[in-house]
Length: 212
Image (cartoon, rainbow, N blue to C red; front, side, top):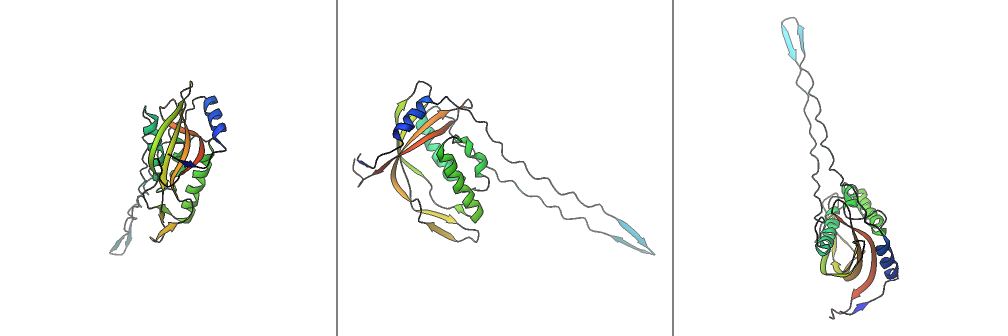
């Protein structure tokens, strides 16, 4: 495979990943169901021979959004990175709740955490939800395993074209950040909850002309 571009973060990625100790992050619980409004009592007022009974107040119940959890609590780091990238795509479909669950797949110390958080907040502010196939992993290779249990993987993935549905129901194509066959290094750390999380990333480049 011929890759165009080199990573200025490659050396730093290797050093950070090898030096980091395994971190753990507690699973964030899904939000509680909102309470049900109390029903107003029925009152009866006597006026001569006429009795008036007020109608009970309408009861309103707001259903909580059920958020799925990522399948990154597996032994195989290749399966874990595929699950992580699928989950990032999924969080873009629930951008309001997404930030609460981001720490299930990223360490907060990773620059990628802040980048994805910014996207989720922008989607929420604009009333957007993702409406496309999301990130698709084309190839995943374990390139290094460290003594502390951390793993370095080389991933070739794609996300193009990208669409969102706005608050009015209109489907919009986003021109920014489209990529096909981008090659990235992902450093994974496994927490005590058995979930793999991305600790560091480094862009290598992209596959040129589909050459192998």
